[in-house]
Length: 293
Image (cartoon, rainbow, N blue to C red; front, side):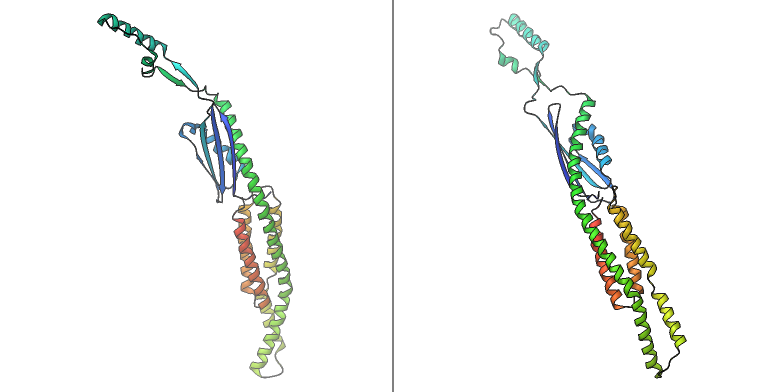
């Protein structure tokens, strides 16, 4: 199936008390280039995300944006440093005895002690389990991205197919005009010679030779045959399940070369008009295939 290189996908998962959201965006690019932007503390999963993308996408610039937010219901738990609290209490008792002080420690006094109470994060899940969650998240995002690329690719394939068939129709018209161009040249040459020599009888052998030379020089049968072959290759590519963008771009270059050759050989108004139409279709086709994977 033909795929476009433009698309977007999004997915989210819960990992160790955090909500991870992955956004994947792709645009045109000559090769497959993957850029991942994610919080520094999660960078160890960057390669995993890149590999997942490269397994599914063969061409385009793919930007992966990762956002991580702590879940409100996963605040962790409070931990009290009991040895530190006991040490402070014992120190307070010693001060009271040594200096004859009154009073006792309150909860507020303990809360003012630095690092007495700390927040303990939710226990991290094992790396293997975390990797599976990350893979599931990026794969879901990629599925959405691929669906969008395939949907747009279908429109590109339909448009490109129509242009290939239009060019095939123009090619058949060119086949009909080629013999006519030689006949018209022979008539024009005969008329011109008669004007120059001002005689009703001309050298038919010389005339036939000149016409034969022109026919050989203006012959575009090879170019038309190669164009027809390229059209068939285009049809096959559009039915392929593999990425076709680069191959199609090469075929368009080859077709453009053949059309230019026909244009340089054509000495006929009708053929020239057909060449102009072919070049216009090729230009539109070139614009479309720039977005095919």
